[in-house]
Image (cartoon, rainbow, N blue to C red; front, side, top):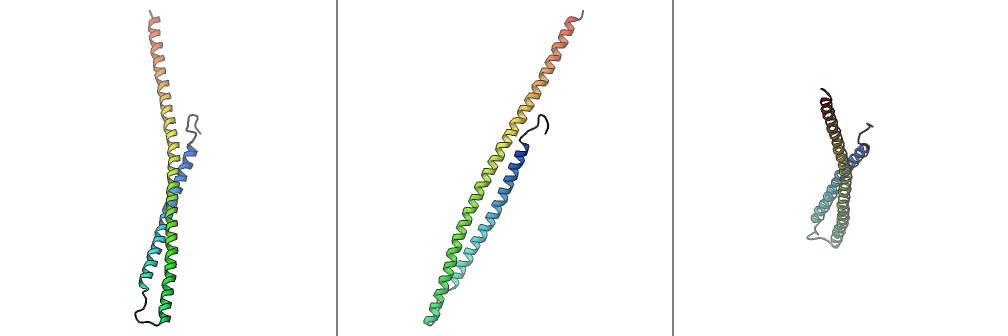
Length: 144
């Protein structure tokens, strides 16, 4: 690394990589949540289609009710999976926020480092100009 270089450059790159990974995890979690909500809607439609028969024997009626109960159980499981998927999305968003904060913290350190370095260079240049001006004035004084 350069003598006056930013020594946390590798850390900043790692923080950016962590943030990128967190963004990808959010995208995956949102896709999973959308699929889970799609499964809920499919189960709801299936349950709505399974109406008791109008004129049926008791066996047909019982079979229809049992089928509705099975679909209702699947709907309940799908609702639970969708709720879990929504929690996962929120967890991934929290991870992304944390990664972004960590990256930004390192970026602020780099900005401060860069500003300090510029100020140091400017001060050194100003001192060099002052030294040259003082030397030139001193040389003019010494000349007859």
